[in-house]
Amino acid sequence: MSGPVTRWWWVRHAPTRGDRGIIRGSGTDAPADTAHPVALDGLAALLPPPDALFVTPLQRTAQTARALAEHGVVLPDAAVEPAFAEQHFGTWEGGRWDGLADAAAAFWRDPARTAPPGGEALATVMARVGTAVDGHTRANAGGDILCVAHAGALRGAVAHALGLTPDQALRLAFDPLGVTRLEALGDAGWRVGCINQVVPEVP
Image 1: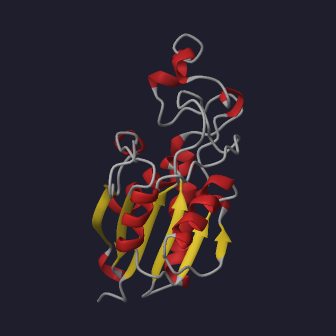
Image 2 (image 1 turned 135 degrees about the vertical axis):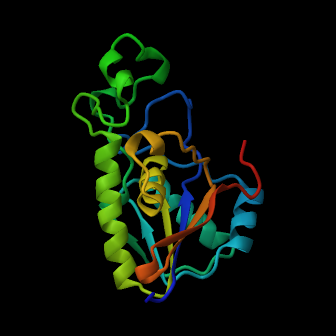
Image 3 (image 1 turned 90 degrees about the vertical axis):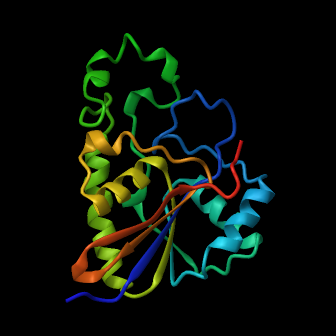
C-alpha cells in the first residue's frame, strides 16, 4: 500500500560572491550572486508553485528564493529550517580548500565521517537532513515542497532517498542553481526524478 506522492524540489542557492576557493559552510554567511537571469528564468519555467517553501538560516538561500520569485515563481512565505543548513567546517571556515592538504591529513583519510575542528561531519549533516525530510514529508503529504539549500543538504536528501552511505553521498556534485527532484511515494519509498539538473548551466 502506498500513500500520496510528495514531490521535493531542491535548488542549490546561487553562487556566493567572491573567491570560490574559500571554505564557506554554515559558519560563513556569504551573500549570493543572483545576477543570473537566464538560469533563473529557466528555473521559473521548471518549478511548480510549491505548497511549502524552506530556506536555511544563511542569507544566500533566502536571497535565491527571492530571486526566483522575482523571475516568476509563485512562492508561499518561506519557513527557515536549520536542519537544512550547510555542513559546518569549524575553524576552517573562511580559509582555503587548497591550503588544507597538510593541516587536515586525518580529515582527508575519511572526509565523509570526520568532522573538521569545531565543525561537523557530512554523516552528521545527512542524519539531520533525513530526519527533517521525513517530518516535512508527513506534514506536507501530497504536495510540492521547494527547498533552497546547500550542497551538503542536497547530498543528505539524495542519500536519504537512495539509501546511500556517507562515502557514496560525498561523490555527488551539485551546481549553483541546479535542481534536484525527489518524490516520496508513501509506503513505496522514494523515486528520483532528476539530480542536479542545470537549466541552463551557470558559469
